Image 1 (cartoon, rainbow, N blue to C red):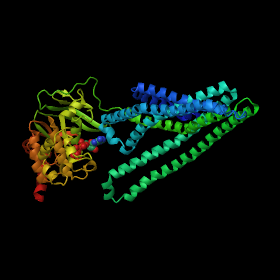
Image 2: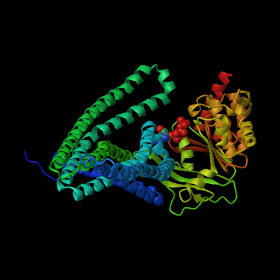
Image 3: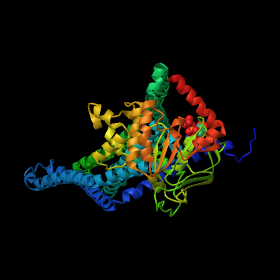
Image 4: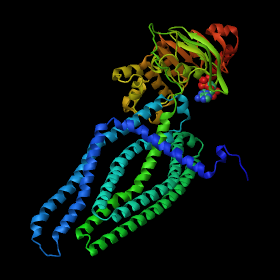
Length: 614
Ligand SMILES: Nc1ncnc2c1ncn2[C@@H]1O[C@H](COP(=O)(O)OP(=O)(O)OP(=O)(O)O)[C@@H](O)[C@H]1O
């Protein structure tokens, strides 16, 4: 069968595998290249650690040499035992000193380098965290928390293992190999060096090839582990929903599906590991036998002394031990590079909403500022426009209310004013400045929001309120709580302000959470306020009570109020009625009632329902 060439689909399998391996390699180098600048901040420590390492290896290689002299000094054949009293004492002391200095240099290396390793992984973890916070709301809505946190965790851990494996294992082993090969080649016949070197080359080739082949099982295991973790976290976060639908068994089965896949791929990984280990031992064992055979033959022929035999044997054992770990270390390094690459992938995610180069802070010379939406067009997904040509102005210090059916785009206005997304047409201006032209921090500093669904940090009530103004005093927190009418409730709980609110604030009722959110926004005290159905979780009595507080909080501020219950917005400067992303009516409460349109019928309907309820 003939095929056209050119498309990647038609590439022979070999060349596809080769190009995949090539991509893997360039990814590894890329990850290494990105790690080095972090490490290079500690260049003096790196250099000192390298010097200590060389010292340790020189001492290490010196030990078998001294051992040889010690054995030769015994000169058992001639039976001159008194020589022992003079020469070997010095050798014995030197032997002890060398052993000790090898350990001392190694410890010094670890000591000097620990700060660099820890500092590097800390810096990487911090930049990833900061980057994630800089990513858009869209990224955070789409992310899968469980899998992502695993990627970060593994990435940070891999930084430490990568540094320590290369500096503490690969480099020292290479140095030791070089020294031993040099001594063998210079002092004895070249065969010792040839056998040792060939075994090493063959060992490394075998280890690398088999490990490359095995990596796919490790990768698959990681993917399955992340998937299982993501499912478990998502399922636990939805604890209540699982209970509502009695779906514990369903959740367990879904989780177990992944666990089963994980088990299978881990078994494969274990079997291939055993194959690798056996192959490695075979190579090392054969080389050892060959070397010992040549050495004993040398002693028998009288070319080598007994001391030489002891020294060669000690060299081999010394080389053999770190070599034993080389396979594991190569695997770990490959794995660490893959993990690091996954973490750097997160770092590469583009910021959807970014500050323009040289953007200045928003200037509000005369607070509160005017807020203006001019012909705003917006879509979360280009295929589905949400806002069409929306224009309105909130004059400085006034309140504009937005009402309308669910899904008409009200909360989207709040998200755009907060610049969670950029508009696709038109402009949003605060004090005359387009919010895309100024820094996001300054815009968000000027706007306070009480959102529809409040999520709290898993900490104390005090921490959650003080979050509005980090560093706020207890008295300020209490004042804000009083203003949001939650102080009495907090005070009545056994632990007061130290009460913990549980994950996402689940230990508080919807209304209590909402009032904590109001308190922390009051504490932030920004010149622009957004209330997105801020009192929707409260009952009518509480809503009326807190409405007064909100009204007084909004005094002297520019406010956008998104409301469900129309009675809460009757005194707004202007009321906008939205439907399907368009403003279909606008005016004061009285004007809209007089118009007799959509607002008037919504008003009548709500009044009728309230009358029926009371
Ligand atoms: N992140 C998002 N990605 C895609 N579509 C979204 C996203 N957020 C909201 N939408 C869609 O945009 C539309 C407007 O949503 P918005 O939250 O602004 O409505 P709303 O008027 O505030 O509704 P409600 O009164 O129920 O809160 C809805 O149809 C919603 O499905």
